[in-house]
Structures are given as C-alpha cells and as structure tokens.
Length: 340
Image (cartoon, rainbow, N blue to C red; front, side, top):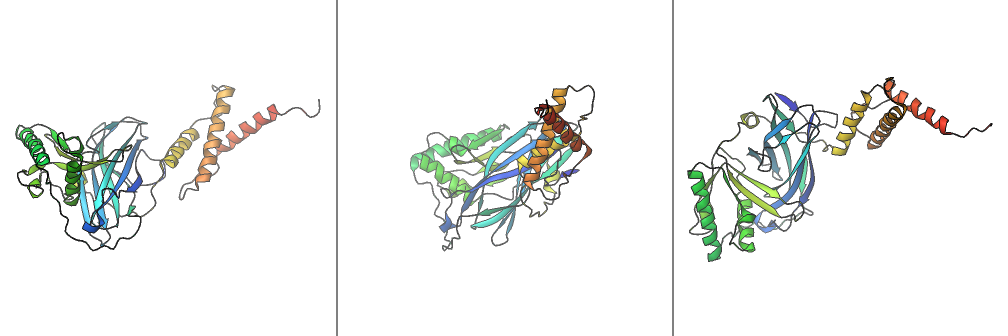
C-alpha cells in the first residue's frame, strides 16, 4: 500500500482542502446545527492515470466526539485523472458544535489496479463567533401536504429502482413539484440526522419528517455545494455495483495538525524539480531555448524563496548556478559598449 501523506514536497498525487466557509443560512445554532462548505482539489503529477474511488473523514466536534464518514465516491463520481490533470469538488459538513476539525483520506487505484491512499492535512472548522445558545430539540417536519405527496412519489420511485437493482439517486434540490421551503426543510432534516457511520446499507427514516413518507435504503449519503450559488444539496445514492474500498475502511487516519499545503507551492516545486532535470549544457539546445529554460529555472527558484517553505531544500545547485551564468552572459551581450 502506497500512502501519500500531506506534504509540500514534490510527490505524485496531492489532495488539498481549501475555501472552508461557514454557512449561516443552513446552520441552526439554537438546535445544535453548524454547517460548513469546503473544496477538495486533487492533482496527479505522476506518469500514469489514477482513479479516485472513495473517501474517509475523521470529524471531531468541540466536545472531542469523533465521527467517521465513509463514502464510495468523490462528489458522487469515481473520476480518472490523467498525468497532469487536476480535479475538484465542493462539499459540506454539519457538526453539533460551533467548532471542530476534520482530517481526511482518499483511496485511489493506479493503472495496474494497485490501491493507494492520499491523506489531507488536518483543518479547523469554526463559526465566526462563539454561540452559547441553549440547545433545544429541533422541530423538523414537512407540513405542506402538496410537498409531502410529491416527496412520497419521489421516494417510491427511488425504492422501485432499488428493488429492480438499478443505480439510482435522489438529489434533493432537483426534486420536482416541491416548494423551495420544502426542499430546504428536507435538507435541514438530513443535516440533523446525517449518517456518519455508514455501512453497506443505511436506512433513512423519512417517516419521522412527515406521515405518509416511507423510509428508504442508501449506500451513501453525501453533501454537495454549488460553487457559484453556494447552495448546499444532499444526495442519497444507491450503487448497484460498488467499488471495493475496504482498504480505506481499515485505514487509520493520522492526526496531522500541520498547515494545509498550498497548491501553488506544490506546482512550483514540481516545476522546479522538472527544470532541474534539464541539462542546460546540452549542445542540441538552441541559444534561445537555453536562455528561456535558464530564465524559467531562476524565476521559479526566486518564487519558491519568497514562499519561505519549511523543510524543503531549494538551495543552490550546479544547474541553478549554470542558469545564473547563462543569464548574466546574456545581459553582458545586451549591454552597450562603453568604449567604442
């Protein structure tokens, strides 16, 4: 098993978490519901394709209670990243306290079906200010009879698809003939009862939301977030054939409290490492190509110095010294002769 642990040093695969944002429009502090959105961006700097299979999160609230999330997809998909590709998805997380933290791991396989794991760094979840309101039991119900009837028909269709062994899903924001307030109420209900400990089959008890609503089975429940509208959505999914990610189920996520790596730093380091491998003294290079590569190497080195990276050796090398000499020689050639 290959483990790609969070680092800012060049490596083949990265998972970077960013844009963590508290969502007051979905949070209900008085009922113990605090919601954040976040973005995960992946980068494949290796030389072979990888397929992302699933994810595992370790969530900890302010009281120290730990929950685990296990999902056999990444944003509902299992995308393949070719060498040089990046991929990002938006998601969200609910907690019962105004503060907490998350640490994640993503399982993927290479072209030869070898399973591997990418770890993310630990990152904080924090509401804008401490809220000490007394927590009361939420009043969650779907009281509009038209919404109840329409939602019941959607749930029935979903159950029929499951019985017929089809891949199917419910995206709450896409449900038709349900009012905006009704869809929002369903999302809030799911955020309150979100199933963190998911097995191969989870039962979602919609009957508690309104009379006449059936309970349904789900292989996974996950939160998505639209980057432009910043609207949360919850997807309930049934997989007919689910990828085997038991290696993630048994994997123990480390508690790394270091700062999250920056994808710009990662790309700079990868570019610097690639430029170091080019032989600037190669006689087959044209003068313009040699000058261009030398300029890129020196420029990348200077940008990395400004980043002030910890634990990364970017000191002077023979290749870098040669690049400096090439640039200085070019500057001398461009200088006007002072003694004509």
